[in-house]
Image (tube, rainbow, N blue to C red; front, top):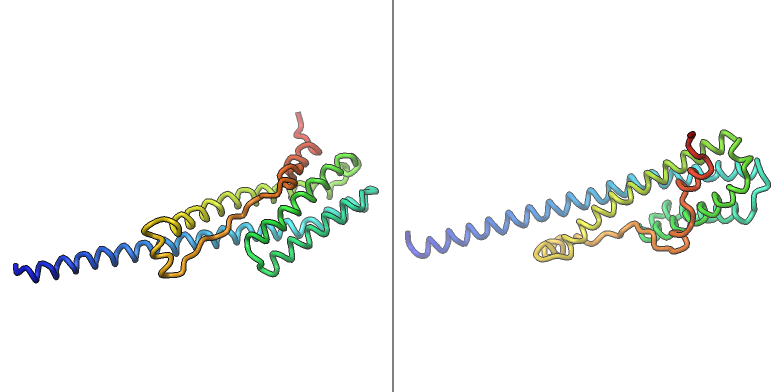
Length: 202
C-alpha cells in the first residue's frame, strides 16, 4: 500500500472516531438535558398542588379557631409569591427562593397550630395537613432526582473534553433546586409538624 494511501486511511479512521465521539457526546447531552427538564416538570406539578392546598388549609384554620392573623397573612403572602414565581417562569433559582420563604411560613404556621388542639378534631384540616405533608415528601424526592440530573449535566458541561461539545452546541449548566435560607432550614418541617400533631396509634 502506498504511503499516501496509508495516510488517507488513517485520516479517515481518525475522522470517523472523532465523528462518533461527537455524536455520542451530543446525544448524551440531549439525554441528560431532557432528564433535567422532565424532573423539573415533576417538581412543578407538586409545587402547584402545594400552592392549591394552602388556601383551603388556611380557610379551615381561620374558621375553626382564633388563629393568629399575622401568621395566616405571612403564609398567604408567601404562597402568592411562590405561585407568581412559578406562573411567570422566573427560573429555578427564583422559584427556589420563593419556595424557601413558603416553607418557612408553613413551618411557623404549623408550630402555632400545635397550640390549637381543637383543629385536630376537624377532619378536613387533618386531611389537608396529611395531603400537604405527602406533597412535601414528593417534592423532596423530586428535588433529589432533579439535582442529581443537574449535577450530571453540569459535570459534562464543565469537564474536558465534553465541554468542547457543550460550547459548540450551546449546552449550558442548569440551576440546582436548593434550600439555602437558614430560617427555612430551621423552621419545623410539614412532615414533622404532621407527625407531632397526629402521632401514629400505639
